[in-house]
Length: 142
Length: 149
Image (cartoon, each protein chain N blue to C red):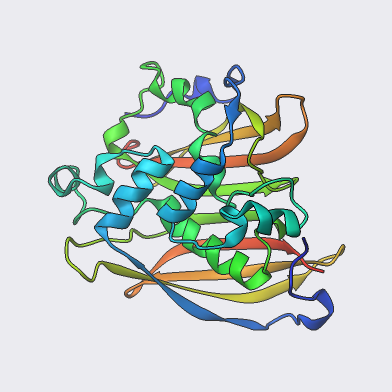
């Protein structure tokens, strides 16, 4: 399949509206099981505080996965993502309550490449903190 | 404690083949909250031109760290796992991962450096099928907090 977004209809500077993704402790437990990353800082508050963290924090890869979901939902085909990289610039602290934390992801078309590919610059925030930096995806458009 | 720079450039033997299953892809998609039908519906994936369901872009994290994992556990490296957080991650794709793939990962430690009081270590992993077809390359940078201080 090909991306549903057409290369010719995309312009540099075009913004992709923000989407909010909720993360609660349950999500981290599920992610630990699915990914095999059982580091205690992602589910054990006692341990997290013992190693100097404010509370349990989300797996960086959980946050990256939300940014990935943002891109694949925009592109229409997950297989159209040919390059995806991030730096984890701040922690997503996930309190043990019913609200959890919110990761807000937005994007902008930064560059149009040859071969009908585009570079999407991504911003991910949790509260006031920018939780990803240098977050970019290269997407093969139709 | 500073990490042992002698580990830079070391490659590790290829992992045992990892068989990508529909069940694992569906479990992973559920864990990240992604309801995309191409991750769970074989008919939808075939209609989209894939052999079987495909995996989300970050899925290789499930298996790609196995090959380098033993290196990170080597006492000579001097890594304190309790202080490790994830620094950077990147995936370069030749094609999406598909259920039924038998994937082999070969890891190389490409960089160890200090940043402030932290130690950073990067592992590059090449992911191919058992037949040798390149699928993706992953770059995983971990941060040992306070390791350089």
